[in-house]
Image (cartoon, rainbow, N blue to C red; front, top):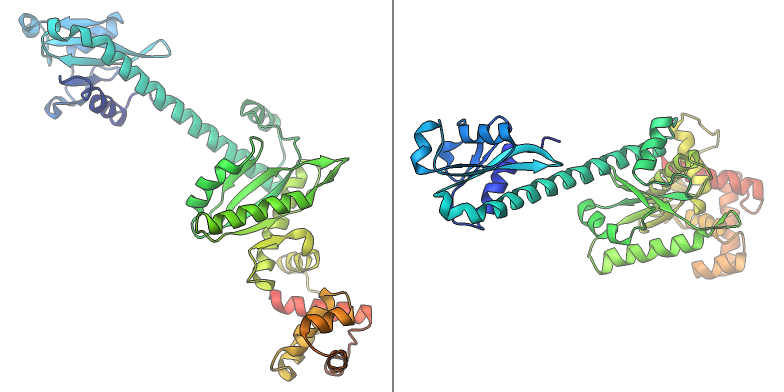
Length: 372
């Protein structure tokens, strides 16, 4: 990083002048005043500072010595060091006898401010590197030696089992700020233009993912954001796939789980790819330009089923695995009414929903229509 620029130098001036009631100047490594309590002095060359840079030691100028130097006033000038390197000079204007005891205090304050700025920049740089690394994992790119060296330097164990989670919200900044306290040390994240992406650490038992535990945690997150923060979020979870390359598959599943979930269940905010394998497959096939030759049976529903009762019945029939008692109970209709509706579907489409193969065709046709 550039250790000392005008912005940081002015911050040093502002903060140190709250400590002592004397004018402060900050000079860069060329001896040019880049910040001062007296703005008229900015951009002038300070010969006293040049002396400090040359000798690597403090330099005092008394009132009687002012005429010997250009661009100076009486005061003391001390080197500002960072990692044992002189990166600038800090000067206090005044009688050296009166201000000498302030010198080390002001010098220490300046060096602490620079060190803090350096550490902040290092942290921000590490965050950017982490985001690049996570993006590579999401894209499923080839991983070279530099990738693994960078992961090691950042303290990231890429072998830890993780699965992809997508969090969408109209207020990503607030969600992310609150979310960070909930993340584990080994959870990875990147803020996408549309949503927050997590590669969340998961627990495996005998190689099997405890998916129910992850779902429960995400449910708690969603409830927290809505009730405690007053923020609506949508959360999509991809399945677990082993290996680093599996992270990209999990991410794509989460993306499609969110996409199809919004269309098929717009009143829901949690979408799990494991519960939507067929719709996700159809969505991915559409993106790839692969069309499944299924008749648009749902169009016939729309023409003859103005109230949507037949479509609702078909979807409930699928949801309840053809259990007529459960379907009739969920729809609050008599079994005879259910039987009539199933026969009506058969008449309109030529496909009998009570036959498994024909039910699959009907269901895929409905899904294709909803996803288009």
